[in-house]
Amino acid sequence: MGSNKKRSSPTKAAAAAKPAAAPASPAPAAAAAAPAAAATEEPKVVELDGRQLTGEDAKLAEMSAADYYFDSYAHFGIHEEMLKDEVRTNSYRNAIVHNKHLFKDKVVLDVGCGTGILSMFAAQAGAKLVIGVDMSNIIHSARQIVKDNGFEGKIVLLQGKMEEVQLPVDHVDIIISEWMGYFLLYESMLDTVLYARDRYLAPGGKIFPDRATIHIAALEDAEYKEDKISYWDNVYGFNYSSIKAKALREPLVDTVNPRAVVSSPATILDIDLLTVTVADLAFASDFEVIIKRDDFVHGFVAWFDTWFNAAHKPVYFSTGAHAKYTHWKQTVFYTKEDIAVREQDRIRGHIVCKPNAKNRRDLDIELEWAQIRGDDTLATESQAYKMS
Image (cartoon, rainbow, N blue to C red; front, side, top):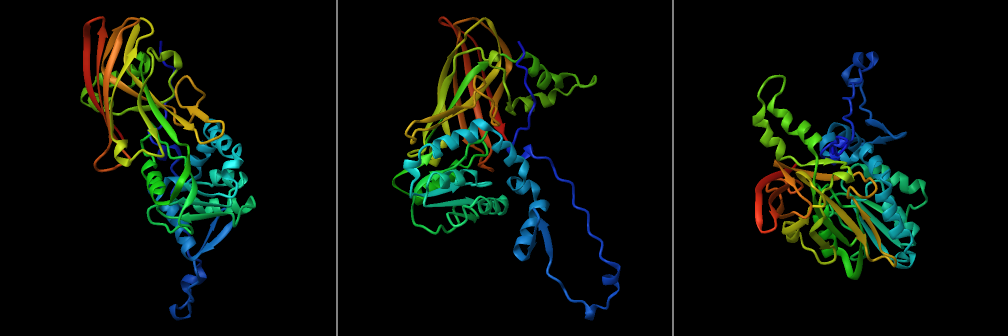
């Protein structure tokens, strides 16, 4: 029973296409021939979205193209993907706009505001002031979007790191943020959201969303595992098996067929954004799942769920295979060995997840598990993974 996967990029930053290098503009012949003493240096003008930019804005616009990989969120492709994710965007809209009694006359902070969609939802819900912060150059487009939609003055957008910008207020009543990454924590901004909470959220303030959980289950995925892992045993007649171990270490972010999930789920992380600390995000958890049918297990699949419990009627969405598609998809951890399982077998496991020591946006994950049938342990395995 193959999982009918559609291959996808492992990182959000890779979701947008790589732009072609901009051709150099030849200097006009007349200008080249003019005497140096007579030349007058004109301010550089860069056109962006129909606007002519000069000075620092022109430099920022050029930097956005030149430093694509360092400023991926300045490009529209990734924002288009997120905005078109109806589960994501409608969940935020429902949680905010349908709770105007919570937002009326409040000061709201949008951490990682992107194109400003959440800031505009908050303004639409009656917020007195919305402050959006983003260090990406997309904020220039966001300012124009805010102006075009009549929210200029009510929404203030600041460019820079949350830890470094100076807000025009000492405290905020509500923090909103779409901070979640693949496997919830990969490339996520949660550290930054927690900094904003501790620094700016007023006593009794609210966070949207305010709860998130990670879940894991056993997966049957023979067809795609054969293509991704076993492929390296014979590459056009050559032995590439030395790469196999490296391929196993890389979790796959992809869409899983719900029929390929062969066990009950287990929750491995449950966080309350009002109380969780940065240290809590490096976690370890025991889990147990029950096999639902006679089949094979080729790995594990993980996903996250998100709650807006501060809303009068709580809003919830899941990124699991059983739920409607989201751009986060699911995360697959292939095992070294495939195991035959029977209905009611148990898989007991232990997972450790922590930020990579060199790059906190990457994750180091260790997964140990044992197959239990009755009182017997039939198989055990441990494997280290890195999401990067």
